[in-house]
Image (tube, rainbow, N blue to C red; front, side):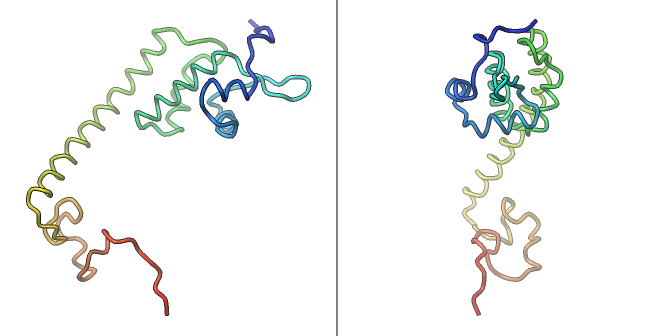
Length: 154
């Protein structure tokens, strides 16, 4: 089923509606995340469904998925029409374990950070957050990992 020209968005319209820069849209198109048809003059025209795909990409990035993971997920969804509720649900369910892992990581970080603030040591020899097991001790004294590295001048 081919959409009428009035159902197509220019790159400028898509940028305005999605809040993304033209360059980002071209980049996403190059990755195959979105698709455009070309007019006789070579101008891009996007289906209105592209807005949903872009919303999907942004949601996936908020979850922490890489663009490669987004590509894989979008490959399972139709390009020429909006996905069904069941198709969206399948993809969303696949993200739940990723979200659960992120929650667990944040909880571990909170526990370590609370302990670090609570102990007040700020010691690289003892600090489980910055230097677990004093692995930095072999490099000598000093807070190497906490300070920005600057090139030495002769």
